[in-house]
Image (cartoon, rainbow, N blue to C red; front, side):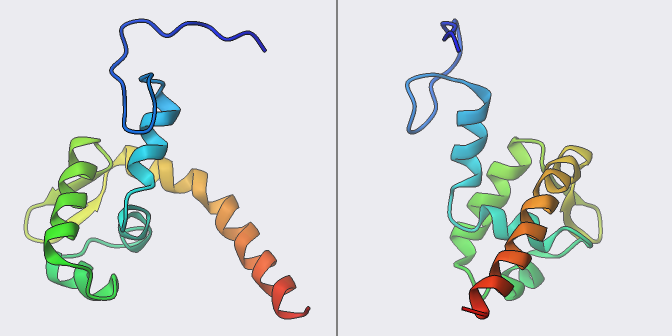
Amino acid sequence: MTKTPVQDQKAVRGSRTGRPIMALLDLLGRRWTLRIIWELRDTTLTSRALREVCDDASPTVLQTRLAELREAGLVELQSGSGYGLTRTGRELLETFLPLHQFAERWQKRQETK
């Protein structure tokens, strides 16, 4: 596969390029980010409720992650009900469901060893 030079893209943490996949993986690799997305998969949650389901994550870290996810367009603060996934956030979650299903099957195989 031929590498195409990336022009005029902002570098992201852990990469000298601004390739979209690198930016997304950087965001998703931050502590609590995937857990927040997962916990919002079926519902909206207030900051306090989200903190509780995230095993009492630090409020500072949780708020930082929520701000990053809001800036990325994956999470929104919904009036009166708390944080929820945006349409883009739900689309991202849908891409994770096959991985979740694989993880469930993998875990069962590990338990039978």
